[in-house]
Length: 122
Image (cartoon, rainbow, N blue to C red; front, side, top):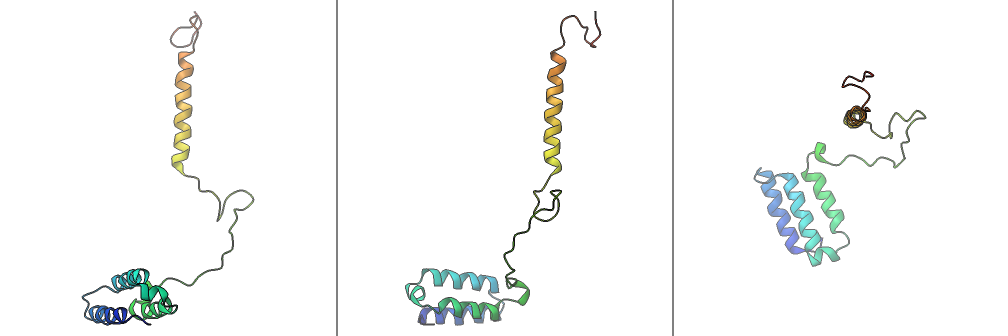
């Protein structure tokens, strides 16, 4: 770590976290903001690695990001269900039903003049 300002800020932030005056997640956010905007830190190839080490010390284990999983593709099963299948929502069914009802309403208007209002022949 080459940035003296960052070192001073880290000490201050760490003490505040220990005193519970600063949330650990907020400290991580402050570190990321500093590293991404400081010319000295941007030029330091080890700044990110050092920050990651500090994050593991500061954040509780349950707040650390989970281990990276393999990047395999999950495909839907033959019938289109299962993991990776497109989700089907009841709202989509409702929209289709609503469209069908809308079309049925228009069919009632198409009854020819030789039928009464109930559809019986005159």
